[in-house]
Image 1 (cartoon, rainbow, N blue to C red):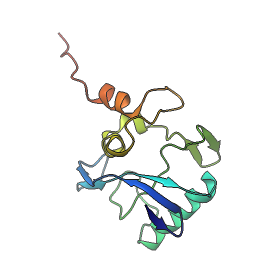
Image 2: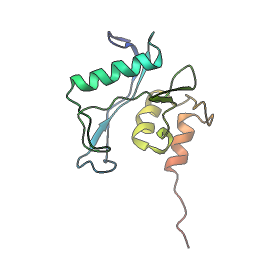
Image 3: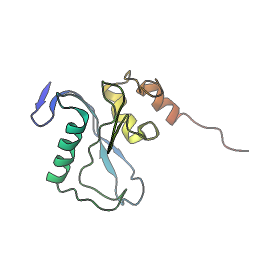
Image 4: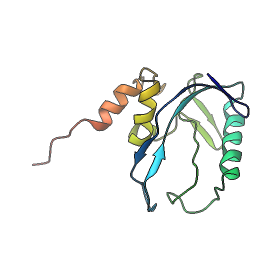
Length: 134
């Protein structure tokens, strides 16, 4: 385990996985996930994450554009959370392989409180081959 003073204790960390950009971004991205044990409530944790993004040079700008760092809360052991500016689980995580691949590497059995699917099941649904239209 590793202490991260601003956030809590890192219990698990995925490998870094490269992925293609979504939207207008012009480069590949490096993605990773971690399991964090924290005493911070989700809004306070999100504020700390956004502060860290700014410290690394992230500036508000074009949605889906290139960025230095993008930190999100995807799932939470408390299940669902909804407040102004924060919804857990992250609304689109199950449609994003760049989220599911690293998350499955460290927490394959974690369940989405909305669908009740494990991360492995969500990943399988996203990546299974689809028949071509006739």
